[in-house]
Length: 453
Image (cartoon, rainbow, N blue to C red; front, side, top):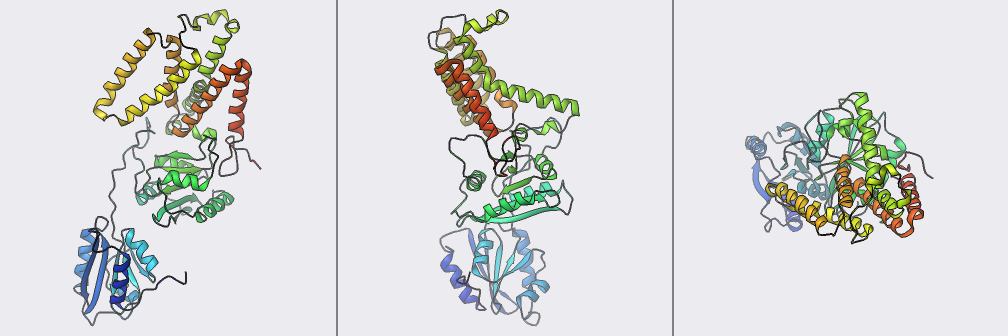
């Protein structure tokens, strides 16, 4: 850090250097204001849209009341006696000045003081802390994380009034300088895992976290491209994040991202949701068991159906009604694969459809396309029924990334079953089990929470 330029006692030198670094004249949102404080030339720098105009107005009004006799000899005394504000810091080099200024902190340079004075009266544009659309709860709180990291830490601090709650702020990215908060309970966390996570974050060398949380996840754990299972649990609910903190887990918050990353995690954590905690024990157990069974059915229902259709003599008499009755114009495996892609196409179309049209268009797509695709002979009714169940059942578990991981496992199982019959089904099932058992997470444990070497 020896090459970092220090702030000098000359206001002119300081402002000249900043004017060379910052596009003050080209960027309308970088505000530079020259004022007189106690008979000394001073310069304010701030970012329009970040600075709280009312707070800045009161601070500057107090500066105009400072006389030459009132001016202290050093910046520390000036910040204590003449700045009627709480969040004030002294900056000695321009690297700190630029970091604070571009984060929205107002910086003041006074002739004769060889430091910059940072006044943190910023306010970020933010939406309300409304309940997230994806992770809703029938009972419990109705607030959710937003894109402002300070608001998110406050939502968790409000729930845990314990001095052991630590929220350590770090910075990643040479250009973006994205704020990342590591949150943990110092008396409950696994300190070996905490050190591992902190060291990994400190060792990240990147220009910017372009996609915020996802970029951080990829930098923390360089996973194989063919491994679809997520390494972290994500939540947009502060109550879920605080519950995990109290269990000794680590929560990572990234500025500009309205969700939290939780680790370590297991397959059992992935399929949990907030409703599991807001109901009595018996109801809680039932919901978990039902969700687990439905999750298994989303993976194995269509491959088992395909396996029995290829071996009709295996089908018990009592279940003969599940066999395909109509003429099969297109092989069942191709019907299933086409519908897998078609369902994702409908889902993507719904995401990009204006909200006022999404419901009627979804109904039209489901009824018209479903009915006429069967009547035209492209698909069989039984195949449409089972794929409709799978597409709806995918939403019973809250983790979006895990849903697609299970979808890829289902596709792999379908293709192997179609190619190699029951040998392929057995091999595909073994691959799924091994993928879960040997899916190593950041903590060094697998999805079953077993330590891997």
